[in-house]
Length: 445
Image 1 (cartoon, rainbow, N blue to C red):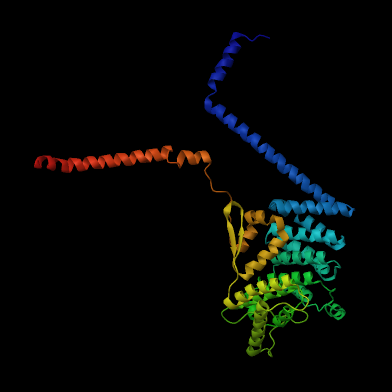
Image 2: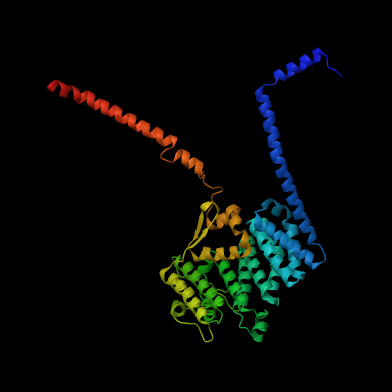
């Protein structure tokens, strides 16, 4: 139907009434909506995928549950999904704990690491305390009695992280440390199995337990440390004589932490007291003289390991690695410092760690986060608080080749302008000199 002239006139008047600002506003809002829409769709797809992985943890087939755990681990290492963790931490902690308790060794190891990632994503608070309370007892059983070393190590590492982040009381920390201590000092025989109620650990499990014990030791307040004595040193001293290099290094770094903690205390050297079962109060029979004697003995052991070869049967490469490791440890104890560890982060930042307290904590965090350490160090507030370091969130703007040619080259516009200004100033100064002295010279002639 052909429109009348009157209608066409009204239509043209309406178009003329719409100004450029209105058109600009409409186009801007439309473009923003088009930009936000794909992001919302992507977020919705990611949430749907995570929900699907959680649903798969209810499946009866072990392969399905393991695949779901692997997917969730990739999600938690690929980004700091704090909002999702806060919404689902109760469900996730329960399902992870079930996999630790009932699953195979491979499933339990995956679930243990997933628990550590969940705690690190949540950060310190009630949610992390809930995860620690939900899973700690199951992780303790696996750490003590599992037959395969890999799952025991995963349980030890995860339990240390859960306690490090989610333990709100020193008593619970002491209890977890006692578990690690029992594993570390296991003599490797049937009698020790019966006495400690722990299945014989491999050297790798013992080393993991020593490191985890030291990490939790670094969190105890100085008031607790100064009230204890050095009954841990004789056991650590015996571990320095172990045949396995990893156990020796773990014991040496724990000793270095103890010396560092003591050197930072003004009253006395701080040591952790451990009897065969748990933490105990200082014994009156342990005099200052005996404490100094134990300290001197450990000091001489560390010195000997830094210059002497290993025991019989050690390969040449292992002997060299032992001397190198203990040379640094002995220098640290002797000089009261720690070799600096530098980690290059995104956007050019460098994380520098130069104390044994932070070095051991860094070791534990990197072990659980693995490939996710960089992004968590970049975005996770918990790690920022631990290391008192906030990386840059973006790169500095670097000029392109074209920009350098336009602004930095000798023939650039800015340089030409600068040269012109300088020449103008010189000519003005020269004119002033000529005007002042040229008259006198002409007059003199």
